[in-house]
Image (cartoon, rainbow, N blue to C red; front, top):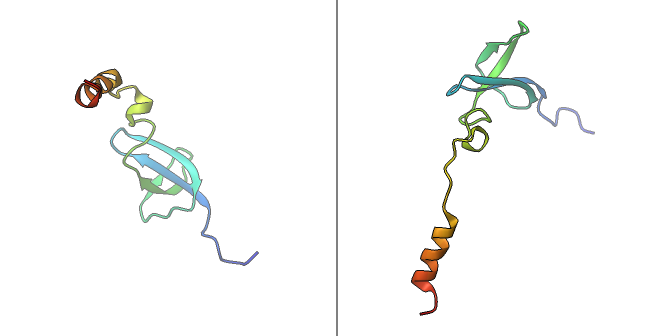
Length: 81
């Protein structure tokens, strides 16, 4: 295996500022910003737009699309007359 080919794999905090949710994981992602984590150490922090705490699929705040109504409208427009 060649040396210095892959980026550094280290602990990084991913933070969703819209809901105040953050988690520590390992990643190759880099960032100039840092944050002090619960264990007292300082880690690079990457801000994300959507996380499991804010995504409608995981929070249950998603809207339901009426697929039966869409099929009926299609048949009315393009169905046999």
